[in-house]
Length: 189
View 1 (cartoon, rainbow, N blue to C red):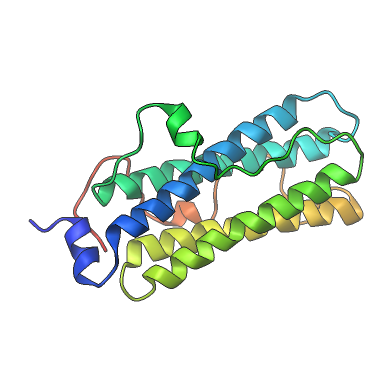
View 2: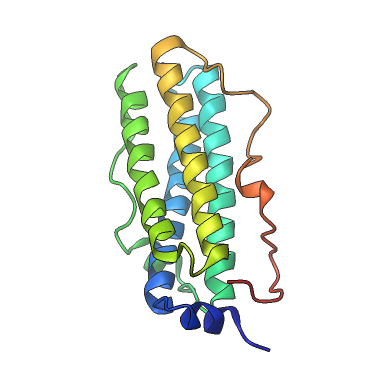
């Protein structure tokens, strides 16, 4: 049986480079989950209930992104460091702290999500027509990041965003359309 790694290599993709990019994206997603968890718990005036709900939903979707990326890394016969300090110490997390101003934190969050979209565009460019599974995964995550940005922009300009539905938490609408199993299955490229 041919492995997913072999299928992707035969398509002309540098699999080690791809795994590095996927690992970088997974590191950023786990860092985002951590940051959003802190922001939802932090007792500041800016974090009223509507914003807290948005941040919780973004956090939960980012956790799904992390899980899906890790699954793809292992499907390609990659691994992650067993020591989380080594994993997170790679410098991929964005360096911002807990904001204190009522308008500034949302603007900072929007810029952070905007920066998070770009690596997925690069993954799409790298894998388009050569690694369908990674391409569709990166495209789904990129679409969800754009949606996160829209939620925050709408919140900043008008209050609770019309596109945001409370209780939708963590459903990852684009990612959930994919069959991303936690166990290894037939290799798909």
